[in-house]
Length: 491
Ligand SMILES: [Zn+2]
Image (cartoon, protein in one colour):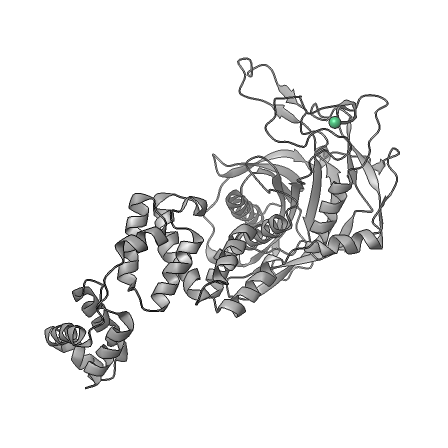
């Protein structure tokens, strides 16, 4: 039963051991072994042919694009790609698998011995090994609900049969649900950067099963492994692992022992249920696929594919931190997708101060978009507008208060920044004596802060700048204001 009763001291005696199996659908135009469209959302059973329906006599022909994408993904996760890999038949009976077997790879997969680095909570990184990446085909889908007679009937949609998949299996290197979450986040990011999958979990183009066991810390052996299936979001993976770790520890603590089994996650109830025990496990009887020759990845093909690798997220973050003097946290946000990073960098290169563009993009603009539930693409302020705003700030032609006011108008009227700026042309006070008069007022109204400043608390200057800017209705030239505040306070 769900626990939440174990003390942190008891939990701390144990070490969870986690490995993840990720299936990703590859974004090819056609299926793995036939020319049917590889497309989500078509009318049921319209993208099918004798090959993917497994009709007698139909022969598979391997899609070279699927090999390229799987190879690209293998390289991106630092795997060694095997020159000759073997397709195998994985035999099992299920209504959504008309052939009675799935074409997969078994003892000679496409790629092995990879790794990815994931950030840890203490700011360092941890390397998670990748056992293998192999190619296989997807099965169809059983539709258990949505029909008038769903209570008594199950329908089959075989459009998905033969969709190319890459299965990526991690080493059992993961120790916490957070690490699992990070691993999946980084892996998805890499695959998206490579453009090999859309990694859309809701549509099933990225699916994840987790293997988890617990052992007393320092114990040499792994505990019996539980496979958790049916987890369809990264958030649920974390929740399912948290639940399962605690459940297994509780079994051991109460004198029992865990057993090797497959369990299903139920997100509504927040718990896992036994699906089948080890005794009921499938015996897939793998054997080499007689209709397909060995898959040969020549050194030339490998070299060509390697050239197609984009700059990967981790390298890109490191470069952007150095190049634009970004905070690591901001670099993570800016590189969340390749498209977003591309848009930022294209704009940043035209700006006087790229870091300021990043700040505006993430805070001033990002905050407004988040509050309105808008995507970056729906922003009234374009990247060019943002660069103009950043440049004006940088040249002290507008104050940050004026910038906020201009952004207000942009969002009210749905206009870009350049148009609003041209029309409104906010006034700026550059007359030193006028600004000094405002500062004098603020200083005489706040003797306590003046005292603090003179006692050595120099940061109080910011308070005076803010107050004086407010008094000028945001119109004081920021550089001049700053200079005069310091002069007055020191004087
Ligand atoms: Zn087909």
